[in-house]
Each structure stands twice: as structure tokens, then as C-alpha cells.
Image (tube, rainbow, N blue to C red):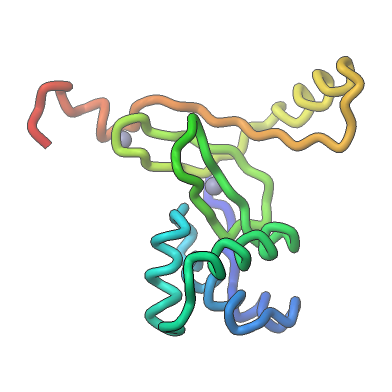
Length: 144
Ligand SMILES: [Zn+2]
Ligand SMILES: [Zn+2]
């Protein structure tokens, strides 16, 4: 199931994004999950003076607007993506590949659990960790 990716050009006009914000969105434009460092490298190819701090601040703002989502699991470095739709992730424990998935039914479970505990304004996400098809096919002692 393919999720729609974000069109930086379209969003730039709709949200009147600054050049910097649009550049960060473009860096994320191919629909992958990137670390802030990788985003920095990509943005620097258009805007050489940009610092990592600026990238983090810009990512925070884009998250508040709802154009960027962040994923981190088990203390690993956060990875960012341009995505509008709520989704969940399959994470390969070997190659760290992240795949976007929908998980029907999770919303209901999350809301039921939260309601039972008296929680409101909840957020939730599902991370399923395992071995992807490719990694499962490689014997554990193989030289990589
Ligand atoms: Zn894998
Ligand atoms: Zn994702």
C-alpha cells in the first residue's frame, strides 16, 4: 500500500513556506525516512550556509504544521519524513529499513486503551520490528 508523498512545491504555495522550510521538504521529497544529518547534507547542496541547528528547528516547525513526521525506536536516531497521513512502521532490525504501513484497527485499540485510563489528546504509533524479506534470506554468519 503506497502512501502519498508530499509535494514540496505545492505545499510551499499553500503554506507560504520559507525557502529553508521548502528546501527541507524537498530533501525529504522522495518519501524516505532520513536522519537530520542526511537532510542537512541535502539542504546544503542548495543552501550551503545552513547549520544542523537550523535543520532541527525547521523540522520542529514542519512537524507542528503537520507536514513532517518523526520516527525513532529503541533509542536510535530520529528519522524524519514528509508525510501527511497517519501511518505506522515496519522496521528491519538488520538493515534498519523503515517501511510505511497502514494498520487498520489500531486507532480503535489506542482510543479504547486511552479512554479506559482516562487519557485524552492521545497520539500513538505502531512499530513492528523484525527481519525484512531480504535480510531473512541471508544466513546470520554471512559476510556482508
Ligand atoms: Zn532488512
Ligand atoms: Zn513513515
